[in-house]
Length: 315
Image (cartoon, rainbow, N blue to C red; front, side):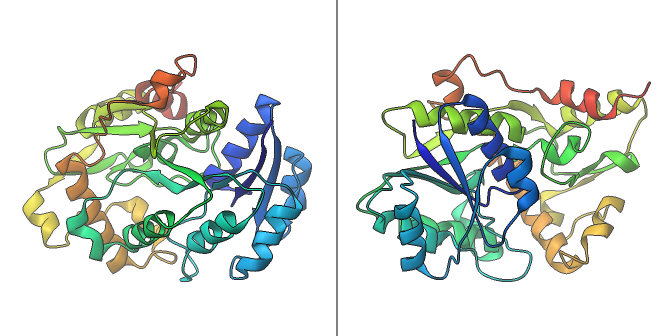
């Protein structure tokens, strides 16, 4: 039995991981959070420990006092309040803790190409965390690469703690702006499946430096056809060429507008232009030699076609 602390475990991918850990019945689970959350404690049956990530010695003491041997970080790499993520401080505290021996650092995405490092804060923050991980002396570490969250297109009908964010293919409004050709494969994985694999790797004696999870692999054009079939309508579709994306321009979709108060329009469209280039370049077409799917064949993943039908099928 592991004594596990999930940093950021009150919401998003963290909440899914907490529930998956509890479901195994194998581990003692605690949540690290910046503020109390009695509702999560009551619903999940897991204590929420309030921490100050900026106080590394204090955080180290909390890990030791609670005998935490494994830390799973789900700290966001793009804090919406404009602050810097606290991943580095968490890594430092876990490495200093006498009881903590393992850490899954926050990633939950795809490897970012180095030529666009300066354009996205999430990439800069992730690379800073990787540099810090290279310094650890007392920890076995891994981070999980899972492609793109399928949840963004299927919540809230398909249970998820991630909010719906239908980039490129705007399913609610029956429109799409496909980056590039749309013929490059993309790995899509649902958070519930990621959480099951995350819980499972705690049973492994040794971790790989990077752990890969593959939910499903489809092109954006295939994804579009599945969405159209689920809704029973043809979408209004445009294609943004790579040349256009390189100028920082993308076709604006109706689903983007509600996000502008939290993600200002110029920054968001620039982000999507970069992201679109990554899709077309195959960054999200993850093809590792070794995956957690192969190590845990009993864990079956949700497929794009099936989950889109569940979320959007007309009756």
